[in-house]
Length: 127
Image (cartoon, rainbow, N blue to C red; front, side, top):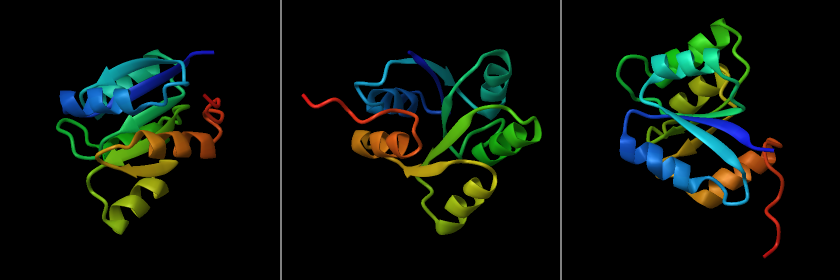
């Protein structure tokens, strides 16, 4: 089954890097959003399983996006992907409903480990 994934980051390069970091054995349909407001519109119009969310963006940042998801009770699992690795930022996003925090630059093994830990994907098949 193909998973619908939303990658929300204001940097085109970061969006593409995130998409390339997704596990090879995970069949996905990826949609990109440039900021939180666009992401919220996409989530309301489509069913996504997972969103990878940057914190620092124009229009609507990651914190505001998490608040909007919680306020509207939108059904999506959010993984925050940010260069802001301060413990306060990590604590705040988890309080707002993010399931985990991944630091940039993203690492495919870390992404796979987090997705496996939360039961979003199974273990990679042995080559």
